[in-house]
Length: 417
Image 1: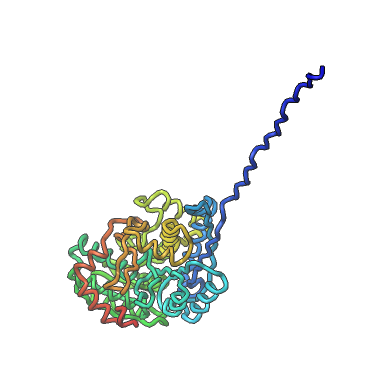
Image 2: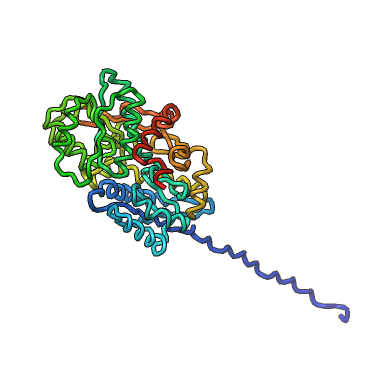
């Protein structure tokens, strides 16, 4: 008995605690504020307000789809911050300062023109990239100022080239435009194209911005018996009045204009027959040759703002498509990182196909995204794309003529400095 002992109790195994999985943090949401510094009221509002409306549709769709997904999983949503510069230089500078210093925008959209000269030096100092619809406001001092869609004044060239090819019997060419930086730049480009294709230039006068009676101007144009009247660079309100006068005074030749926004208003004042064959450079986005997505944008815009879908309406959001591509390439919304990513890309998605950076010889910076540009013609009261032409090819073949005319009107970059 003395050698007996109780059986040892089995060892107690402590309970196994499952590892705690830390909660997965939701992807970070980054708000990218984009400044829209453009004329939203006043005579130049058609060059700004429809662009803001187009941006609003673009931003709504982007945000509803979850934004831009960056490589680290974070999502970028867009907030638009508009500022009405009324197409006044001092107000453009005030707006630029507010957008950067108070609103912390990472991009500023602009329509272009003299307001850039007021605002872009400040934006450059702050290293904020800006977009324009007209590279004619480029200078070497504006390295972060980009034209990602429209490259005015070269956009007036394709219709003139197309007219010369399609209508060889047309020989005499009259040009009429307002006397401001847009008018002078586009006039120079149009006259260079006219000379390059062999047209005889019979009228090329600028009119004062304060003109309200266009009957004497059209009478003077018709006195030269032109086969072609070109109004490239005229604001929409001027185009309306000049075309109406051409109709009232019995013009029977070819009409060409840079823009023909809201042309139903012109047809109502003239006729479908009078406007037949008119050419211009900015298509309706319900054009059957464009993509279904572009057509859908047109119909949505028109449902919200009936009859107001102009070229600017799709150009502003098309610029934001390029910005989105840059954000995806950079993996960031930082203005300078996006700028470097865009400029490092051999091609970027332009609204009319793959685009390449170009422009140093003409505008002092390779900051214009160039793609072939459409020619639009009126058929039975509706504008339709009838072809595309390369503006870079035109420059390569006719740069001496283009420089000569731009210098004539003081619009080469070294003159504007």
